[in-house]
Image 1: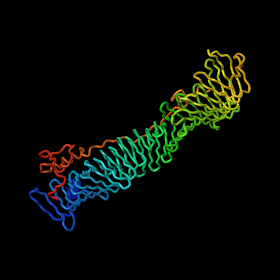
Image 2: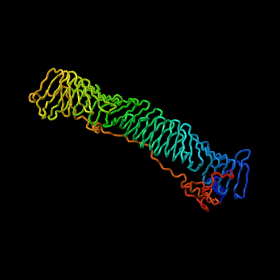
Image 3: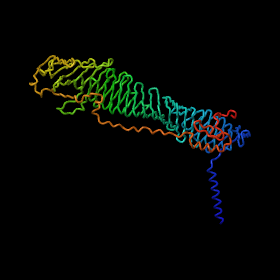
Image 4: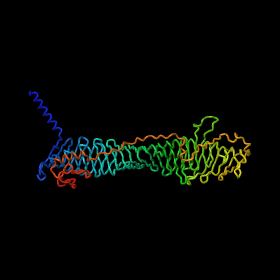
Length: 594
């Protein structure tokens, strides 16, 4: 074997030895020991260190520095106990103080007790006892803790876990986030300290001075005060409650938007607005809603329904107004109506039916599509219609039709139509039924007159200054006032082409017969798919299989009855034993040595 080859083998062997040594875990190193005390009663290779006037004991291991006033180092187990004014520092970001710490160089698991304070750049965690697994870079407490973050407030919980690499907290059980503007309560909260993002799981509330949020799955940005809630969610704005499949919440703007299956309840005025997209501005006292929008005014005996492409509800609680735009329709069990837009003043009880000129065809010979109301078989149209209700009694009071008033009803037995037209119309209600109608100025009538046996004896066509029409059950009593001319013609002598006034427009097929009929002309409803939030991912237990294996490995070097590296493990984990069962009554702080 030549000399060069021998040198090569020597170099390879040396390199292999160094590599193997470098891959072995480093042991705990005492950087500054102060006074050293050896007590044979504590066992062989057990050293006690006590601080000196020059400074605290300084302990170093794998990138972590620890200082304390007193320490006991178990050399065989590479295990150390630190007492009094303990400080732990990992890198430039993690700092921890406590009264007591024990740490295994084999498992890299630390246990801290007594006024524990863990700080990182964005938050400060305080608790009574804390587990710190440096291998996983996670900290854990199970006996109540508090996290303080300047901009987000204070978070308390019974159980908590901090993922250092993600700057993420997972809080469990009795979680409360207190902010100057609101209080958040839940049973599980994932909180990212760098971004201030909070994710809620299970029944949760966010209660502020002017709003209350409930959700079972939600997100909240504690820096920007923005929220997104996607399961059984609702926002209560004083006297308005907003529900929907997906809710966006902006605290700074006092604004809420909701998507799909929305319900906005006005608790003071006993009204409800439904739809599939809504915007609510609390400060402006306004609600905008579209996509199958439906307003419901709840009354003791009968509710009023208004549907349109778009609904706006505005005004203070004591004076709310509902405006329905574009193809607006109304339904009540004894009355229905239709117009381009419907405006309802809830304080005065005035509901206006309005048509817009821009929707007219422009054809000289076409019939103008005017607002229309149906009641007791009567169809009433005009340029605009006012329906007045008695707000206190929750009953219809009167009806006014302005310009081109026109009443049409089918003849009770034949195929003809009774018609009355004039400049204006005033109708009166009793028990929500129309009982008296006055047609004022330039009144005209075509009326199928029948005797007591319902036999047709003629068709009345007349003109007069005014016409009064009274309803007595199924009978109509017509009184012509200041009649100009007219006569009753036998049916055979009355031409068919003269049996309808100019402007006749029977629209019975448009009449809503039910709440469902309000939507029959709407295009097919296509709801957007709610993306929602990422599904909840269950984490492994803090004391997982990897940690248990590390503790078991450390136990092989422990000469005592109890494996020191595993003696502080939480009771729900399988205790590790060396010779005898794990003792449960180990004090959190060894007062005798403190």
